[in-house]
Structures are given as C-alpha cells and as structure tokens.
Image 1: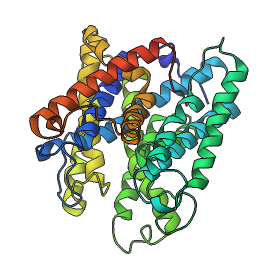
Image 2: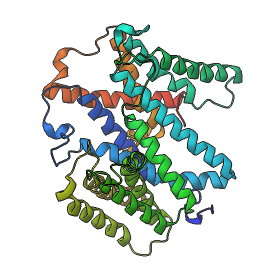
Image 3: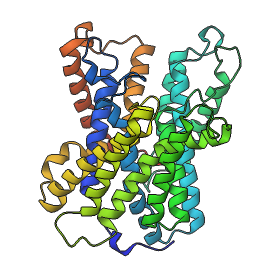
Length: 396
C-alpha cells in the first residue's frame, strides 16, 4: 500500500473535535437513559417509529468518525515503516478487543441465572468493565515490564475466568453474543472497512463502490425471504455491512477533504455526497423506514448526511477560520474515547455492588434528571483530563 502524500504529518483538529463532542453527547444520553419522564426526542425511537432523534445519531456519528480516521491511521503506520504483517496484526487485535469487550458488556446486563453463579452478577459486571483497563492501558516506556505483564496477563486471566463463571438463564455455562454490543458492532464495522480499504489501497472510487455495496446488502438483508436474508453467513455479513456503510462513508468524506487539493472555497464533491446520502435516505424510506434498532439504510444514509454537514461546519470553523479554543473542553474525551466509554459502567457497577447512591432520587426524573445527566457528562470530561495527565489511556 502506498503512502498518501497529502496526509503527511496532518493532525486534523476538527476530526478530534467531532469525536469529543460525539463522546460527550454519548455519555449524556447513556446517563439520560436511566432518567424517568423525559421527552421522547431525548430518547431512542422505537423500532417501528419510522423516525430518529439526536440520540439515534450518536452511534452512527462514532462509526463515521472511525471511518474518517482510517486513512490517517494507515498513513501514520506506513510512515513509521510498519510492515503489512504488523498492520494486519494491529487491525485484527483492535477489532478482536472491541468485539470481546462488547460481548462482556452485553452479558453483564442480562441473560444470566444469578442463583447458579458462584459470583454475584453485579461483581461479575464490575470485573468485566474494569479488566479492559489494565489489559489495554497504554503504559509509559519507563513502566516496569514485570508489572505491566502482571497487569495485562492477570486481566486476561480474569476475563477468561469470568467466561467460565457465567451461567446463562438456560442453565448452560459460558457467554454467548446475544448481540455484539456497541463496541462489538464498531469492531466488526472497523474490521470489514479496514480490510477492504487495504485491499484497494485506499482508492476513493473503490471505497465509494464499497459504500454502495454495503447499502445494497443492508437493504436486501431486510427483505424477508431474500437470498441474503435466508442465507446465514450472508445475513451475518450484511448485518455488519449496515454499520460498515457508515464507516466507509466516513472514509470517503475524509479522502474527499484531505487526500486531494481543493482549489475552490467550497468542496463541491462533499456537498454532492451530502445530497446523495440524503436522496438515498428519502428514496429508501418508503420501503424500510428510518430505524436505528432495525438498522435500516435510510437511517444510515440520513445519519451519514448529518455527520458530513456537522463535520463540514467544524472544518470551516476550525481549519479555515482557526477558531479552535472552544474545543478544549471536549478534547480529553477525544484523546481517550474507549476509557471514557467504559468508565461510567465501572461507576455504575461499583455503586450497585456496594449499595452507594451518588445522587438523591429527585435527580432521577424529569428536568432535574436532565440537568444531572449534563453535570455527570461534564464531570466525566474533567475525570478524563486527570487520567490523561497521569497517562492512564486505553489504546487498542
């Protein structure tokens, strides 16, 4: 694979800003999910609603950003002189880690028989959320090697033990991927997109073709009795191509912005894709509706259009107008996205395990609950700032 010259030594602060904002909103809506009596527009829409809220945009925004980052990540590794073998190993390890963490998180939520488990499910969940931290922490170069090995391999051993301690509500031992979890779905989408990106050498037109193919497979898979829907392995692939379409849309937009010289002040190809994404969503809506839960192509393409508009605005504001100071508030999350995703779960299971109540019940519903969710999200950003300072960062 060739190095892309236009991506040399670029750190795009607008991509970091979009990542940080997305993660902040993600923490907010995740906390808000436990609050009673909040407006419907602040919650996920039901599967059959044919509509979406800003909450339904958070997950696709994260996938879109993953895609936008792929060309830069590949270029950085090529510039370092990494071999194809090293890059492939890194890709598979990252995807595998995301899938494993996602499956553990899902199994911590439900599907167990508490009466047959040796360990209380709440402590099982607490350990499942904590262990990724020592396993995938980015240790400083001067960190003692023996201690690093103890923490990493000890964490792996704990996760393996947790697998065998898990008793399903069917009475069987061991976990199953009831669904892959948000991180698992990101892992699969990342894997499919990166493999294809590598095979086509990051070619823009080939990535556009992959985007079209992903949308088509997503659509056919949602048609009952179609050959894709009725073929197990094809349906599995098509299901993950649903989310890969968002990641590949991010790759396409990233290449259109940064892998070519833009002569005019307006990036017309990007504007064209905003219109194309929107038109595709409108055309497919009568057949599939807009639904995050069902993963319809109208939802993915409308999300891609909105994400592209949001990024274009940030690009204009930060890269063109150089207005960047405001984004410092969000940057701690952008620098450590996996840890800030895991941390609220650690807090939740810790409080539940030791019967600790952080806030009174008054803040668990209505407007006070919404305010608390904003406060909690802000606190998490400041916590990440401290953890980043002390080099506690997860890197897959």
